[in-house]
Length: 84
Image 1 (spheres, helix red, strand yellow):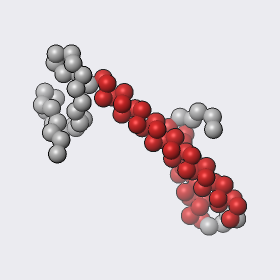
Image 2: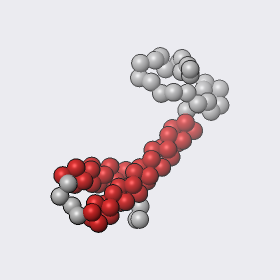
Image 3: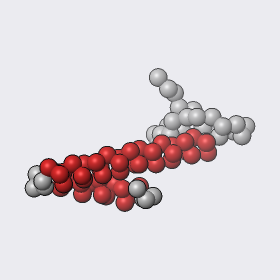
Image 4: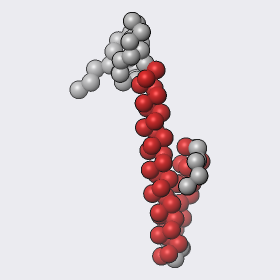
């Protein structure tokens, strides 16, 4: 499968879901696009995981050390996130 952008993969996944929900496809065609959807889904998950790792690497504390913390729009920027 050629490299695809996240947005393109997600749009194709939405199209595949719509086509499968209609129920108008033959079994062979349904299986073919279902398989394509699985591949796209895995590619999207990998892209999201890679993006998350990049964000984690970019988060640093005041001393310049890298420190993982959850990103939340509701918490104060100076306060580290609390994991439970």
